[in-house]
Length: 591
DNA sequence: TACAATGAAA
DNA sequence: TACCTTTCATTGTA
Image (cartoon, rainbow, N blue to C red; front, side, top):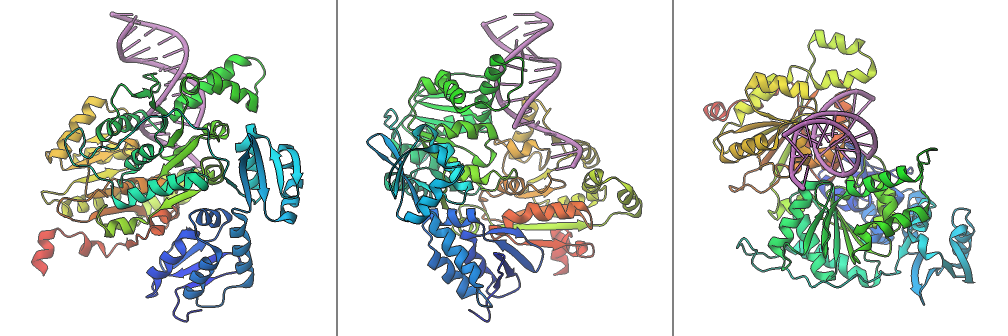
């Protein structure tokens, strides 16, 4: 207990954190590894301890006594006994059950006889058991390893998978010390650590899992480092073709592999090599097409496990090469059907890479069971302190509705309210002020929004070019070029900004509207401006929302992830604008 | 054979 | 919540 502590632990497993407390930062950093942020209004943030957050923490090596010690040292009041029990109980469950391979049989074992018996009797678990050996060992169906892991996690008893992997075909891979493009190349310490943790954990600790790192921190490089450790034929899955090509470029640039060994498998090109980069879509597409062929009449949405397996065996991507490692890029975007495939791929080592484990579809459990637990993460602010990503300030500008809009808003059906609030025309004025404020020669401002109409209108008003999904590639490249060179200092983008990896860096990002509470979107967007600036300058992020509207609620949810990473949102209301929005010249004149 | 245009799905 | 973008396969066109 600590009378000056910043946190209060409640018996429903929620933790309140006082933002204005001098110990706020210490407290937040202490609890972040085993909690999730659920609410972050101005003064009091709410975190939650969930089963999954405890298990993920346990998987990174954190133990219950230390978790309790951290809570104890930051907490204003005694920790409720139920919370202590819950933490001890659930953290102990990770590793209680283990999967092992013995003489080609898949064994499930535990040291706790009673608990083991109870688990084996569970209705969902029983069908997987082939043979009882003794009180602490059973033989389970090796063909359904993934399925079993899912069931166990859902039942509250995650199993630690120590059954190892089928060895893929070997492939010698070395990282270069000088890239093909002639630059010196060396792994950063955290990149080396991340790859090591993943690989070393391969020997005794499962060897599959997820590495969580911010955008722009070199996740691809960690993938390469892992490949160099595992030395095997590798299948890399990415969310779109341009990141596929980015991977191929990086591999050829930074390893000894050459273009004839690294192939793309997508809707456009279907080639397979010792290292193959494929899109998630191509996997789901394949399934659907086949499914349609097989039963044209009666609809049968779920394929049986045998069918999935047969599918896989006939799929060139899996029949032609023996993969020893699969890398899931941006694992938070993994489409649901690919989980089914991953269920069948439990014998292959799997590495997930992501900037945020949060999925808006609540499939975190699937990622945990089927790809693996979190193996490594590092808070954004630490990379910021080490200079690997730019420092950033996040601001939320709240603007009122004019009376006319207020009336319209009040009368509109619920589902139109968010659009009305998001497209509040008063936003134009704020954007204009911000643009004036950030008009130094080195400033590059990106404006990003969700509604094409709104963007088009603003683009017209302020005479700023706009890139949307239907902008042809030629045009895009031209605009990117102008933006990079400084001929065009401001640029507007629609949702393409979330995906386009070739979008040049900027130091200011203005968000005029965003998706319903998508945390990962906000994180992705901030990532746009986080590349370190050559002059060491800070990045600025402004989110403009309409005050007292649904949009404000959504904005709050969007901000959760970044708040969790230690970014404080400054809230700017009318009245503060005049001070904050003056041009640098005006400010200088005042001083 | 290569390519646009189109539509469905996520 | 509704909207937007992307991907892939199919069909049509040169």
